Amino acid sequence: MEELKKLLLTAVGAAAISVEKIDSTVTELIEKGKLSVKEGKELREELLQKKKDHEEEVIDKDKLNEIIDSLNLAGKRELDLLEERVKKLEEQIAELKG
Image 1 (cartoon, rainbow, N blue to C red):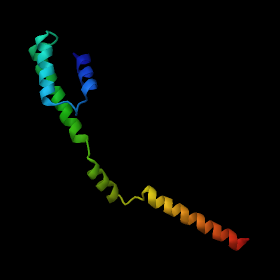
Image 2 (tube, one colour; image 1 turned 45 degrees about the vertical axis):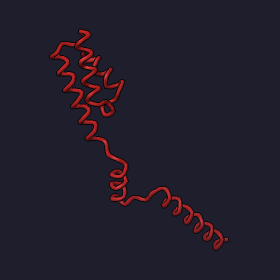
Image 3 (cartoon, one colour; image 1 turned 90 degrees about the horizontal axis):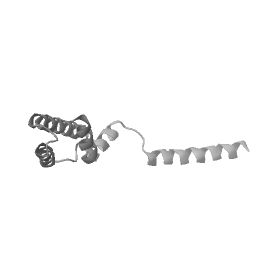
Image 4 (spheres, rainbow, N blue to C red; image 1 turned 135 degrees about the vertical axis):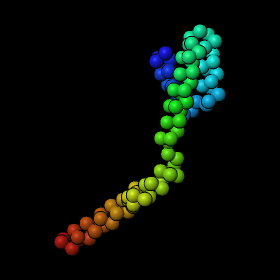
């Protein structure tokens, strides 16, 4: 049964699978005799829990940008501008020394 769980989670992904898909897959496995009813219920509950856990871990893009902004970190654009300014200042210093 453990291999079956891994296969299902790998094949469809914990977050991408719908409740209906979980139910239909588990029902199909029970009907084919691959799982007992008890095992099917346990598998269903475990898959639903993993789906819920994964969905809670996912942070949407807007929330991620909000978190990054709140950290007050310099972005690539700001770093590029600073590098250009430093380069110009180094050139000016070299000219003054020369």
